[in-house]
Amino acid sequence: MEEVLDYLAESVKNEIKKYFLNKQDIEEIRLRINKPIIIKNSNGNKILVHIVSKEELLETFQKVCEHSIYSYQKQICEGFITIKGGHRVGITGSAVEENGEIKNINYISSLNFRIAKEKKDVSNKLLKFVICNSEIKNTLIVSKPGCGKTTILRDLVRRISTGIEELGFKAKTCGIVDERGEIAAMYKGAPQNDIGILSDVMDNVSKSKGMRMLIRSMSPEIIVCDEIGSKEDVQAINYAVTSGVTGIFTAHGNSLEDIMINEEIKKLLDKNLIETIIFLDDKKRGEVKSVYVLDKNNKDYKNYLI
Image 1: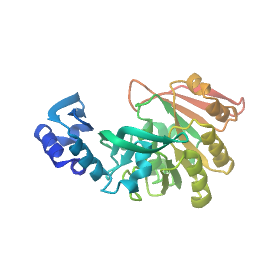
Image 2 (image 1 turned 120 degrees about the horizontal axis):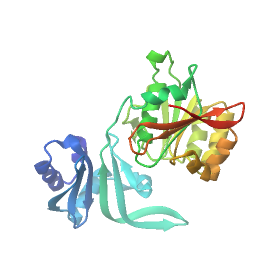
Image 3 (image 1 turned 60 degrees about the vertical axis):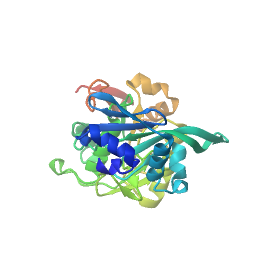
Image 4 (image 1 turned 90 degrees about the vertical axis):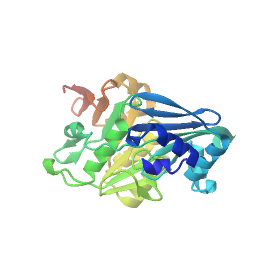
């Protein structure tokens, strides 16, 4: 947590330290020009007295960019920057758009520091659905936003690419496409999260391009990416699976009917390219609600009774 505070303007950092002696409890730090500092922890939002000045916000932004805004231009255009420790800083301001793409964000108006808290062994309950006879099934993990699917995906990759002794499962090479930096949280080429010993990462690239690049250059046994759904994603998954690479992916939704509404994901299911679909509970973070397993004989998905 101390490494996050070091990115803040000194006056802001000192103000936060006055109120939060237990800094490990902080989940978010929000800074908005001419507004009070907002700290989010397990008890909700805490509004501090200190009003953030334009100078304090810009000083903080400069520190986040390590005083080289140009070097972070691509991340800025994505709306966030990953800093040391895997923490993410969300950015808002006046977007500069050209040909339908964000080229820059001017007049930065607010920053949101989201504190990364890595959780291990949260995927243990999923292992029996993903691994069969020491082989990985093509798997789709589905949930509403905020239900822990990325956290579970990260831990699942860690276990698969390290090996699972209690299951007699030998480590497999994983290729991770980390488009938004939420899985590995790369910082200057080094993953800030534990993603296992046999994992290779492509970040800051679209899922479709990243999958093809990893398959061609790194020969992964497993390809991994978060929040699939576009036509390009599905085309790349088709390419991966037909190249003999197994995939583990996530998607937004709450039921089989939900994901079938997405015509591109429906194509994957209609072709029986996904063998296991795991739905997470939207009321109990990280818990499995239901599992559908492909019946290869009847070519449809059967609800597995948990």
